[in-house]
Length: 339
Ligand SMILES: Nc1ncnc2c1ncn2[C@@H]1O[C@H](COP(=O)(O)OP(=O)(O)OP(=O)(O)O)[C@@H](O)[C@H]1O
Image (cartoon, rainbow, N blue to C red; front, side, top):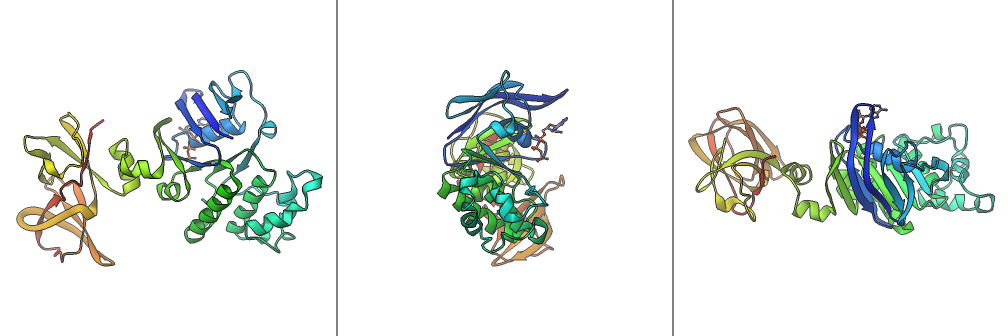
């Protein structure tokens, strides 16, 4: 079952939380809503779940209107399952009873199978407070999935789990969701998490979707320098177009440093990868602010005369007392018109 948002807008009084959001979470796939705090992710999820009324636009499941300005079925009447950050298990019920909660009487036997599927075999008789945070999240996932909802909505489901366990939990979760063919919309503010779990990512900024794409597409063709920096770990350098290439605070870079077409604009954002910069000693070059040895290379923070910094990663030895010129590798810069 696909879940479609069509021209959704939402406001809390004077605060405009969402503006003209349209996209479809495809059947059986995991779609992540990714963006900084306050960009409207939870609002969008709340509208789909029925925790909020749709003010403008519509939400459809497999092309049928689920909710719009006129109709707003309550959460329990929607074919959706919900998983929140803290799991929100019923504290007075055992784990088995929590999982059985949404199942019809004839299907209670499935609980044992669900416990095994989420790695909690033998723990059904415990109460939520007798489980670790990660185990509670697994139980919450089983409870949400057991009734077989057509759509699963997850709001930061791994946020309260420590980072090592989180990676394992989300990979297990991805396999489970994909095996079950659940259409999932998952909220996160962590680009690494989105890349790790999502089939598609809706990148949100201030109530709008700036790009809706697969992880590969976001990597290969980011819609803006900010999106590129978010996913590729690259940095944004301000530049202007000059005859031979680009003027930056770090010197003049030739046009063949650019990858693909250069937009026809004077003010530019150049997306620069730290490991695609060559350093050459130059007494008139940039000062070194920090040097940090990491694995096989060194991460170097260099500072321009106006105080702007650039980070380079190099395998060459670097001295904190010397000055350096930086030059991007040919074909390594993505160039965007500054917005
Ligand atoms: N009940 C409310 N009343 C007023 N403003 C609200 C309310 N809920 C959310 N907002 C505002 O709406 C905007 C979107 O909030 P929302 O919670 O959807 O963002 P979010 O991306 O989920 O953030 P976070 O990652 O911090 O949870 C924010 O500016 C927020 O301050």
